[in-house]
Image (tube, rainbow, N blue to C red; front, side):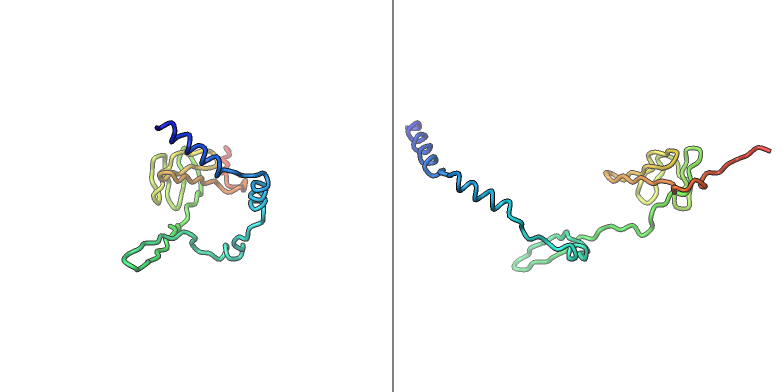
Length: 136
């Protein structure tokens, strides 16, 4: 009995699964048609594209999730002896500043990490940032 039902269902599916080459070509041509999207001016004027919608008993409340903006930017001023001068203070590896932990100090930059967020700060490109000591 199970075999008969299986064979009947296969025959039914095969009868209704009749796609011709013309139908497939029409589907492909619809995919290739240019679709109208959002204008660039509208996208640039958008402050926050991500929202969270919460439904409560015939009432929909929309919350805009704020982006955490740094009010004070991290700024690297100097590097010396494995320490970095960041935002008015000398920091060494594993010190924290504004929620970030200093993980690496190199010749021209540092790496800060906060969970999955990684920031790389570099010294300015000017060559006169280096202190030259001369013996007299």
